[in-house]
Length: 190
Image (cartoon, rainbow, N blue to C red; front, side, top):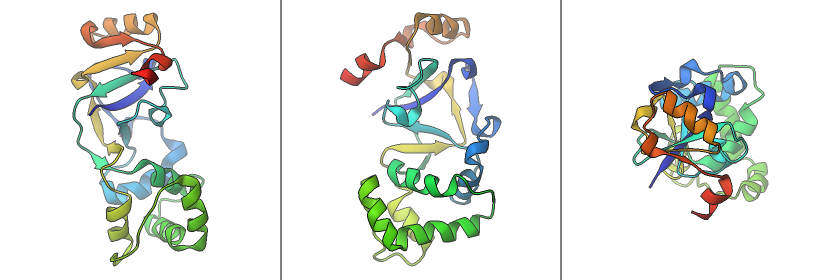
């Protein structure tokens, strides 16, 4: 299985990258909350999907880096988007306050309505607290990982949408043998 990370062409460097060095101010509260469990703030995301999850499909200036194996902090995508939708606009770094919000989200009657919209299931059975619930339902290895850092030199494949981006990547000393120019439609059929 391949895992993918997408980033703007101007942020591509043949080196190890760190989430802490990237502007993620929009996600500040959510990242602080996640850091309570992951151990780091400002994650980089990798996914087993080439879709919008990693920003590739909607932006031709993004380059997709594919990795043949990946280890990181697992966070299931759909429930994470649900959590993110609630924590996004908060102006706090109080992770205990945010824990209360997240627990209320998943315990409330509203969660049943939203659960259908987001198409995921969760189960409090046997869970003694929020941490146990999250480990059982959200922080599971399904479709994406949060990472503190990622070494772009370890990519097994690099995909960009334009020949000019391929040229830029070769100038940045990425291996030309692993760089492919491909439209999103071609990728979807693969």
